[in-house]
Length: 125
Image 1: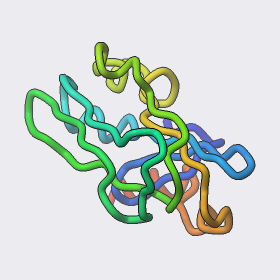
Image 2: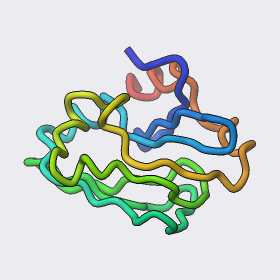
Image 3: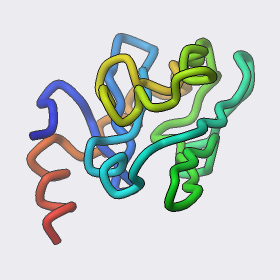
Image 4: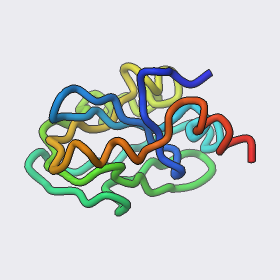
């Protein structure tokens, strides 16, 4: 249900680690809970994000939810496609619906995140 090659937060974000960079998105669980996503607000390239702090918003037909940084770092890419097609977060949350890429300050910070099995247990609870 949740890709094994990703790490997860209790706030329902995922990261895909690639050396000193990570790609960040929200989980299928989060996008299902939100409903139809109609707008995504993301930080600009070059902005810094702090682990555990909001860095953007996802707006759905139901609500507006903050997206939290799983790790600290600098935004090196943002998914510009979401400006015109935010529904990609619903249809492909682990692929084309990614949000940002970060150059990570401390790669060891990813170790404390949940693996797929632990995240599955978290959403069950």
